[in-house]
Length: 402
Ligand SMILES: [Mg+2]
Image 1 (cartoon, protein in one colour):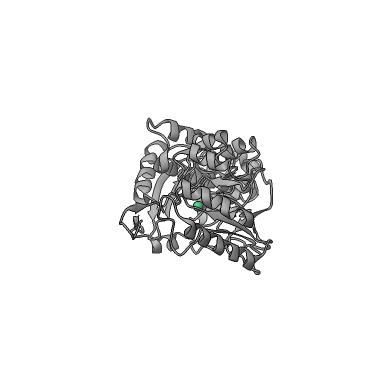
Image 2 (tube, rainbow, N blue to C red; image 1 turned 90 degrees about the vertical axis):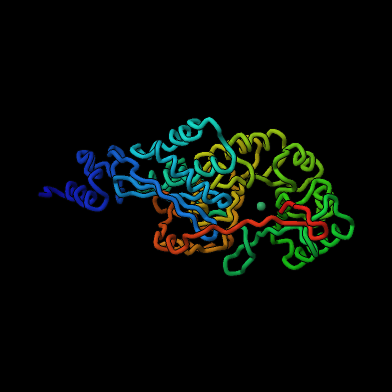
């Protein structure tokens, strides 16, 4: 028999979210409006599932006995390895309260003897996003509120300049008739890149910020030449001017130009970004929330960057959890600069995110990551991930960076 309004609400929650929602009935008055459970209620993880999509996006779904589920996303390279690795973390996580997210991050990272690297960091990242998603949903608040935000109401984005969205920031590669295959490109190649960038600057005018992404595909000697030659056209930043495995080389190049260097999409965890900051290799950090360590770690990296007056421009060529988690970060740090891929609506959501207006994406205000994944749409896309193809210099058949 449901005696009163408070108990009736608890009973309804139990019907919706399972028996755990009945725990702590006496605390029913402390339940936030719309929150599925009270802060005093118990909740535990019951299941981890992973989904590898045909476009290589990898999702992790964590279920609880309260009926609340959380979603996260991982690295798209090595998609199947990430998915399998995340399932192994189930041995640790199943049966535990999902809400001490920082503790779980530590346990998953430090519980392993071999740490870091793209796959391990991606596994931690996807699970971290899903745990924050659950925790926010438990308390009916967006993740940024649990992390002291909001520090802003919307996030500046770059993508394709468009009068409808107001996007006025973009990024291109150093384009010539061909890619920078050679270790040291000659005058013809450099002049071609400059000519094309100058034409782009002419087309969009000075009001559009244009970043230049070398993608680690240019060797240091060529990068050095391009950096100097392109300076008069004021690129917004130079991204991944060389591969990120030798930070000293990047730091040397950074000293040769007044244009800021950006990097981070192939840097992992706080220790990777520590070296970038200490050596002055870049002033714009681009960690990816899917594999730099998740929301928990990006908040730490942002704090480290703040001490160097460096902003974050989170990398994101991925799906809806990646974008939503990045926006939660934008809303809980002071030093956010811009978000990648702000001009694309995603079709895996039950409801689309609020659209970009005047170049800014509103921060999602719903609980958790602020999105609702449509699992049926995810299932429709599950399949063999896309193959990454090695690229070659067509002149001699040698392998080149891309
Ligand atoms: Mg890039």
